[in-house]
Length: 345
Image 1 (cartoon, one colour):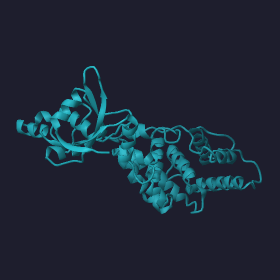
Image 2: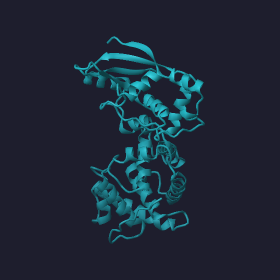
Image 3: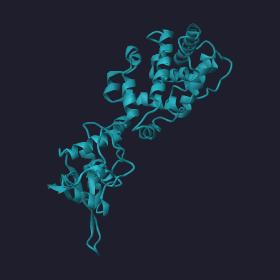
């Protein structure tokens, strides 16, 4: 493939966007989401006259009657869109870090912004499939991205940062919850994101709410302080239980349920820790006997819980079933299930 790189003045790109001759969001491209903090940092780069990486375009559809055609942005959508939002005073852009609105620039500064030269690499005429494949090659790594890695590339905001920090909490480190492979593939952050969303709302199916909440709390995460405090209270309670390093409580599926239900019940180290410890140890022992096929007698709670840890463990129904059981065990209700009431922040 022969390509040509040229410089285009920013004013030309902005005019092409306004006149719909440059398309910033082809159907094959992911909708990227920068936080306003990062948008502002990018704009600061441009306003200081510093360069940023080239954008890739390809030839789009041409009207054979009028001769008018379009160009497609293959890579660089977020950068170009941010520049356009700045120039047009878009309400979607909230400037931070002292970046002044375009309207507050003096004439000389406005001219410098409009005359800023963007490196554009023209890929020529490509089919939609060729363009799609090229986009993914430009944005690919040496291995396929999992869902959390894709979201990490798309979202860089406050909820994502909070889950990054939470995954490194001493509670998880000291109890060896995550492996080095988990950290390498961001499975630890993914697990923490699922936990946080569940604490904010309710049990849900697999990762179905991740993108919604990452976008909702991309710029601000007002619940952070209270959630941090309540998570610490629940983590301290679980630590105080001293369940032992071989307890199934430290397996990710079991720990997830235990944290959520301790959090929902508002348990703390001031509560009857010894009673909770005995209840959980007896319960986990029954679940382990069922798992080994050597249960001496049928235990409805343990059997229900064990069934919900098998296939489809991350389905909403399984998460709910485990939560109801553990909630009942913690409250000492061995004869029937109690339906836990979600907390709200």
